[in-house]
Image 1 (tube, helix red, strand yellow):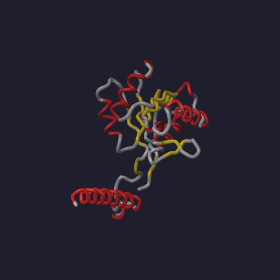
Image 2: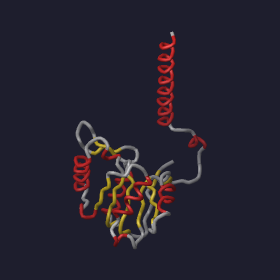
Image 3: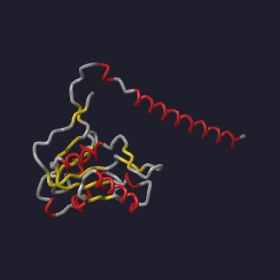
Image 4: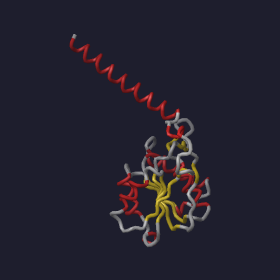
Length: 193
């Protein structure tokens, strides 16, 4: 199905963007977006349109490959190049999962941002877990999916078939599982003979 961007009818004081969308290129030392990078790009787009005044980036995946200060410097430079004022940004590189993302966001949230609705930007499949996690906090959070389907009904039965990329991923996973089992059996056979 085709994807479309959700439309916002109002502006928000702040948005929390759940990471997992990028890493650092080992060759160039620059930002390398993965399949969830649209979360970060959409947050920046909404900021530049004036729909969001402050951006909270959460999640350690962008900092795994390098020491945090070095990775944060590269990410901040990227944001500056994209026209984001760093006074409007808070980056939390230490949260390791969604629960920690939410907890640390609550701890870091500015008092003036607590009284207004907050936009939670992530993938559609991730948002139910995010919204459930936010129930423990006294915040008004509005979910924003970066990957909403443009047609919610199935118009063609072929859309139910997995994509070739999915089939290739499963093929690689099965190959690795079989290979791991074979090696394990070979080691076991070598010890018993």
